[in-house]
Amino acid sequence: QLQLVESGGGLVQPGGSLRLSCTASAFTLDFYAIAWFRQAPGKEREEVSCISNSGGLTNYADSVKGRFTISRDNAKNTVYLQMSSLKPEDTAVYYCAAERYGSGCPRGIAYLEVWGQGTLVTVSS
Image (cartoon, rainbow, N blue to C red; front, side, top):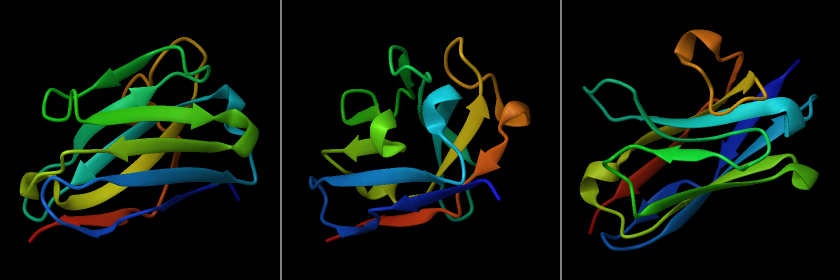
């Protein structure tokens, strides 16, 4: 069964940093574009970042641009989301999702084939 597993969430103070990981199980990420989403209580799901299968193309939501960095290590079958200068409004459950696609970031939610279970990030003093 194809699976993505997120890790690295936790409680952090405002201004702090966390690195989230998204690791694939039972398949290789080499052919997959990846997106990170987040959903805060009572809010709609938001795509925060994405990366092409090669890592050559990335994109960020305006709300995280300059603070978050997405990267991938295909040898480790893992995609990362480095989050810095965290704010209370970054508090959410963060999910990664994958589309088998070789021409850029995932094309949209309808095309995403595999989702992780989510990891909670809480930014609070």
